[in-house]
Image 1 (spheres, one colour):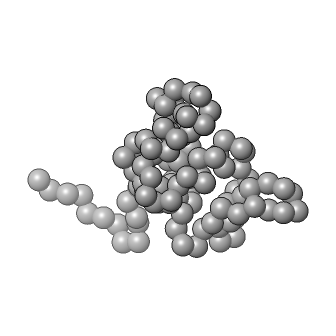
Image 2 (cartoon, helix red, strand yellow):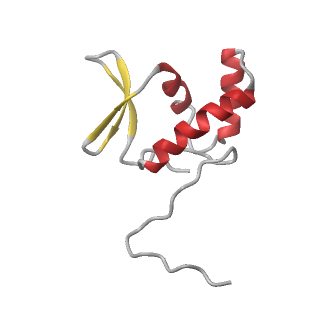
Length: 104
């Protein structure tokens, strides 16, 4: 089977799945912004404002837990079906992975 040549400097897209173990790269961190009282993602030359649900998800992204385990923990905390939470958080984490904010 022939593989398509990779373009120099072009990274492959990280695909988030239930088995992914999302975490923040070293240069990006989740931080409480005291002046606004909100949680944000601090990235080089970018700040991402987060809602409460995103904060709950991202606080569990430690590179050890899988997306499925995160969904399970949140399902217990929020008394919601794990499958529904998994369906909601996977696209959010994929969007952040596409922006380079989390790694799979």
